[in-house]
Length: 508
Image (tube, rainbow, N blue to C red; front, side, top):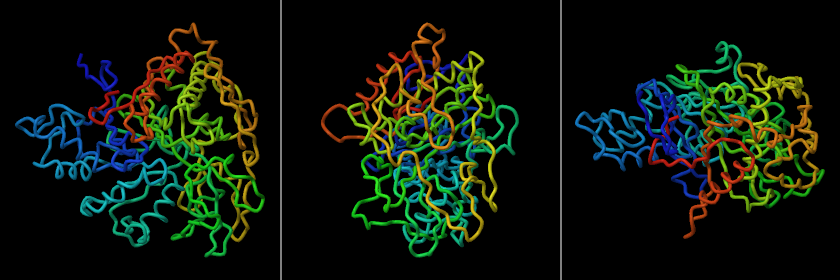
């Protein structure tokens, strides 16, 4: 049986996924921010066989890797013999030309988790090299994410409108995803999944990436939410070219400014959660899956409970051995206070989240998953016009002309929570989690300490979006990985933690 070495240093048999992490960091360097390529190993580098998840770094990262391995690792037939693109036949001579070939021909779609610049900059800069004769390149995301990209990037102001909407150049086409999956597609375990590229299916769930101030649009005279990437009351009622920047408070827009850092003032605009995404990617041939997260904050800080829904969807897949890996951010080490995480993770919170996942896995194994009836269902979409929006928006729909009032939020006024101790994550202590109606359960890792196998045994967790400090000291990832391993061992999770290297492909 053939075996392929992956970057974790272990030997994997019959890998279903080949992953190349082009951008493993969250800045400040612009050449290594988030960008991940994923393909099914069954597709043999065929056209449209790669999906890009985020595009902060895309073409530049591909060319950089080709420069490292060409021509020393290419055989007489032009096939790469080693490196992250091993097995790929290169039709051209230079890394630049072959990079353009990969971008044009092999990348079938680009999935965007959220529209912050470190996740979309490469998409904007790279798109002009697409050839209209090949048809538009699909860009898939939740409706609010695409609204932000459409309104604030491909808008003929920040960048030319290269999309096929509003009279654009037609090089990109927007694919609006249904949150939680589209039940019209697929059967059985693949129900809700849609085609991502040749060989891969995807399903997208919303997560929270901190909070920001919402603004009403002063130029339209309406009270509709503007096109920012938030969990809005009505995601589709967006001006086609609304400019949402507001500097009247003398501050700058923060992607995930903690509500604790902003004094509550009834006269100020309400705070709203910044919407990010978690993409489930499913190998069509084997049914194996991985999850790739965008930027995300812990439920214990956001008070929303959106991560819990991801873990509920993931737990049965882990229990059955179908979910092989999770790619998730851990931007800072544990010395960072909650108020300065800005909608990101650190080791103590990530292990607490994984403990919540482990608890769900144990419920599945014990046949207790789903015993408590949930009051909110994220799997059935609500259609408005030609687009589908999350059911969380249904309760706030208004008829035309109605005034949309800002929604009060249970976290507009709360005390700084105590940091939960690893080993007994304090989820659910505050009770309320938005409008879900359920408190988050408190996992008890001691209850599975003697369990064989451990809840997350066999699961690989790859850490992305590490914030570089650009100092002469050790890389920040070293400390983050050390803390994760220590916390993970104390929590009896059983999963393995890795920091991926762009130099090698990851075989999962």
